[in-house]
Amino acid sequence: MVLLHTEGAAAQGNVGPSPASFDYFQYGGALTAETVPSAGHICPSDAVQPCILQGGGGLVIRAGYRSRSPWYLGGAYEFSRHDSSNLLVLPILQQIRAEGRYYWDQGQRLQPYLLGGLGFALYGDEWAAETAGAVGALGLGLEFQVSPELVVGGALAYRPLLLRQWTDSAGQLRADALAGFGLAHLISIELGVELRDPLPRW
Image (cartoon, rainbow, N blue to C red; front, top):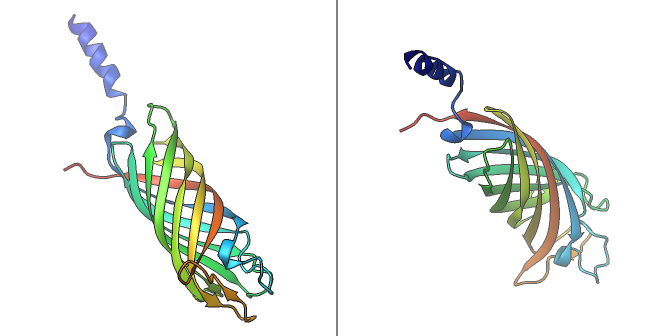
């Protein structure tokens, strides 16, 4: 009995703690591609000038708190270069978002999650802000745990973009609806890498 107990204790000592038993500071980056299935009031059908906001791609930098429960709460900064039909020299859409994820944790390395977000957006030429507004996010993602400290994954999300009315360099009035705002609809795809640092327990 003593020998069996000793062997069992030694075997358990070789097993590390489950990643779900810690709180983490999780941070990383992702490549993103955004399509614009409908530019809405930003590119109205009766506009004389072509659409100033079309598809593009860029980079996301994010950091947040991953709890032992299925929740992640954090923030993200994203910038993406878009096609503006040559109305802008370097059209950049910037987004600053608060984000949340809910994981379906089944004790496996591959975990799906539901994501949501809300934040602030800027759009203009060469990092300038010609207009600003709000942006949201709702979608689904997958995360694969390469190691306790490293995860890779991807996400697909719908993003409503509400920008304030402005007149572009060609003299075209944009987003002239909804009490001085205009709504566009974006779809984003992300592929990223994130690191996790265990936080000390209270």
